[in-house]
Length: 286
Image (cartoon, rainbow, N blue to C red; front, side, top):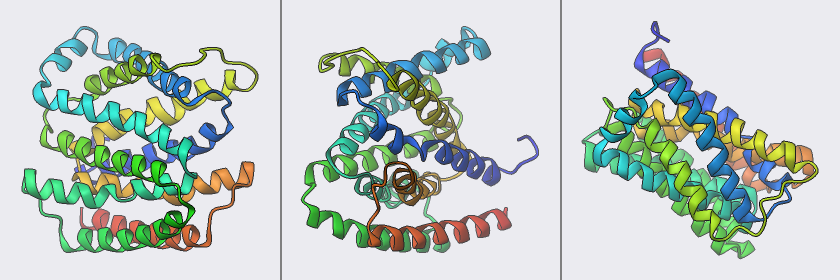
C-alpha cells in the first residue's frame, strides 16, 4: 500500500469493500430471524470483532482516537448507526434491487454535499459518471414505483443520504481515524435493536449464515469504507457502491431464483460500464 498513490489506495479499498458487501442481500434473504434480531446481530458481532482487532493493533490509543475525533466522530456515529438500521429494514420491506438502486443515488448526494461543505468540485468525468449512473438508477427505480413498495424505497433513500453524509464527514476529517467512531456506531445499532428483538436464538443454518454475514459483509467492509474517503473524494467512494446494485441481485438470483427485472439488468450494465471507464481514467491519471 505504501507504493500506491492516494487514488489507487482509495479505489482499491472501496472496490474490495464492495466486493465483500455484494453477497449481503443474499444472506439477509437466507436468514430466518426477524428484522430486529438481524439488526441486533449486525451491530453486536461487528462491534466486538472490530473492537478486538483495533485493541490488538492500537491498544489504548483506540480510545484516544475515539475521543479526539470530535464532532466529526459524533456525526459519523449518528449517520453510521442510522444507515445500518435503515438498510436492513429497507431490504425487508422491498425487493433487493429496489434498495440497492436507492443506494445508487449516494454518489450524486455525496458530490453535492462535498461541493457545498468541502469546496471539492468534482471534475467533468466524475460529474458525467454520476449523471449517467443517476439516469440508470432512475430508469430502474421507475419499475419499483409501480410495485408499490414505497416504505422500503424511502428507507433505501435515507440509507443513501446517510452514506453521503458519512463519506463527506470522513473526507473532511482526513487526518482523523474514524473507525473507532464506526465501532461505537455498531454498538448503538445493537442497543437500539434490543428494544424490538423478538428472539436472540439462532438455529439451523442461521448459526452459520448470521455470523458469516456479520463478519464478511459488515465488519470487514465497514472498516475499509471508513478509511477509503481519506484518500479519494466521497462521491468516488460511493460510486463503487453502485457495483452492488447489479451484483447483489445476481447473487440472489443465482441462489434463490429471485430474478431481477429487465430494467435492473439493463440499468446495472450501464452502471458497471460507467464505473469501469471512470475508474480506469482516474487511475490512469494518478
